[in-house]
Amino acid sequence: MIITDFERGVRSPADFIQALAESGPKPKRRKRGIDLAVKRLGRQEVERRRSLVVEAAAAAGSCSLLAQQIGVNRSTVSRWAAGDVPVLDKYLDVVEQKARAAA
Picture 1 (cartoon, rainbow, N blue to C red):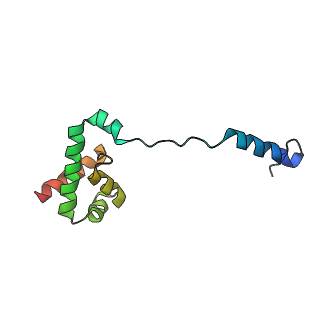
Picture 2: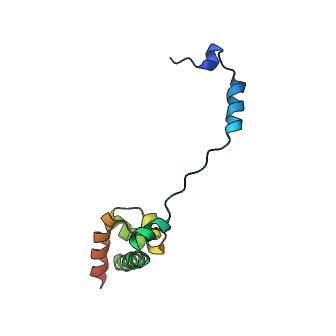
Picture 3: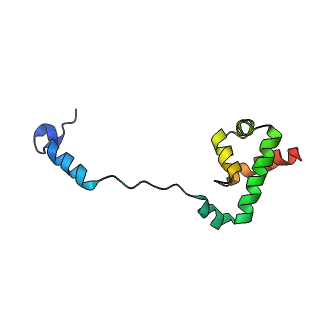
């Protein structure tokens, strides 16, 4: 059993609450935005990948069916199709195959 400083009487809970109030909320981490991917890949490549996802989703019938075939969440495919996030390299080959099957 771990005995805390509060149980020993070394520190008061009021000290802890005061220190917590002074520190304030921690800043939230931002997720990587599409701007970083655009700098790395280029705007044309991001748009090409987005159009491939749209074609592959049309061939599969819906984003949900494409997501099941690829093995990712439906929301991931929706973000790819919206252009919010570019398709990751490890899924790009599968998406290209699905898009070619539609053509």
